[in-house]
Image (tube, rainbow, N blue to C red; front, side):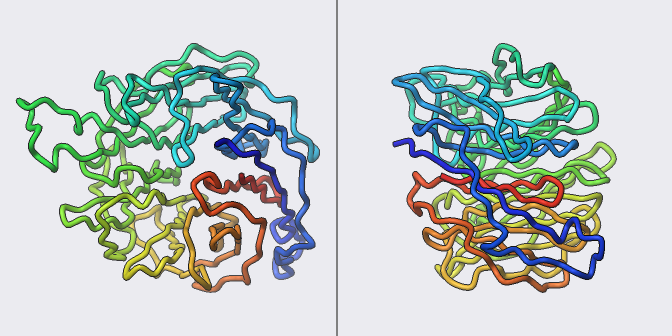
Length: 388
């Protein structure tokens, strides 16, 4: 069932203070509820802010058997009239694997949808659409991956990078390999992590396999540091340890996968709880959920060198949590993280020195799958939240 969602806006005044030592903490008195631009039968929201500070909201709206990917931009606390990116009646619509949209701030935009390639539940392709006129017109969809396999492809992350777009995704091509190609090898049959670079019209210039064995259905996350793109994701060892790893592009070459921190979370199935990351220069912050010993926790970790090394992680949640994190970096020494404690959506500012501000309850949602993943983005001195 697709449930309606609302969008919330919170003013975080400490980002715009003339006196950097005088900070205003986020609280209920700084929250302002905005009317949603979406229809009541909408879900799978995603938020993105371009380099000019324009906030975009995308979502899926269902009318009878047809799904529509729509978007709107925020100006003077009002959402623009929704535009349609694409529509279809054979899409894979899922609470955790949702479409995304990005803009370079110069009128170029990119978005993706998930389109079923055959009748299998998890057999679908990632299809990209681009626009060069601020979303007034969109290209025909183009399949991101070129393996031609009827398999699962999804959990996309995308960002503008230099004059191109950078994209990461989970790729199931190895899970449907023919017998002659090693069908019985469990290592070869695992989900893999791939990435690509493409121009503003959607033409791919480079593609890489970054990790050949990863967790099956946790969201990927990427950030662009001063040294280059980094991809953060839930890895999967032969012993089913599913901790968060990072790969970095340095001088045009990709590093080997490396854990950001060893939780040693052994779990036989995918927890459907991916990390979120953001960067400012070479300052990188990452939030993630883990549950070793069946005790759920949300942690944030910082790096000053683009992910080559990390500080000690900071535990965020005060009580039991179901994860579903988001994170935005605020400045060189702090970030804001959101997460779910049961049905409560909470947020807090956390600092690279290990300190954190008291958390604030932003809103309530369903802790079931229909509640989806709360979204967060920053524009100027404000943080915008959206949730089902």
